[in-house]
Length: 112
Image (cartoon, rainbow, N blue to C red; front, side, top):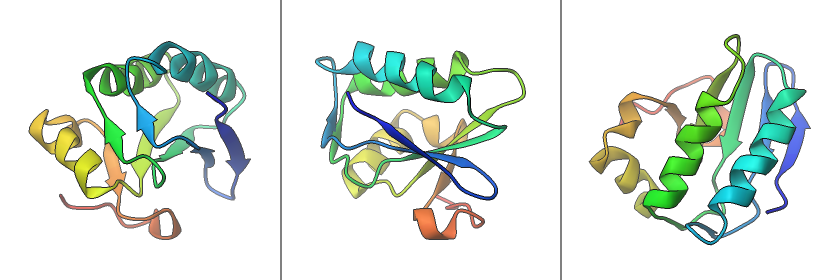
């Protein structure tokens, strides 16, 4: 999975170019996240605007990516498609991650 990173003033944004994060790409996703977050600052935002489907393996990969980050880093999510947001709500992972409605408004967290 070819994730890309972009450094903004207050955060490193990691863009997911795929429509799916599922069992087929979960390991590659975690490896790419590790490589990109090793050099990132304290705040990392995962831009999920192109992701339309996530399964339990994909959700697990995002949680694993969060856990493999340094102690001084935080992983936030942005621009969740309604189907993807529903997965986070149903699994209560929306209480674990800061979720932003859109990448442009990352200073205002989505209340749910």
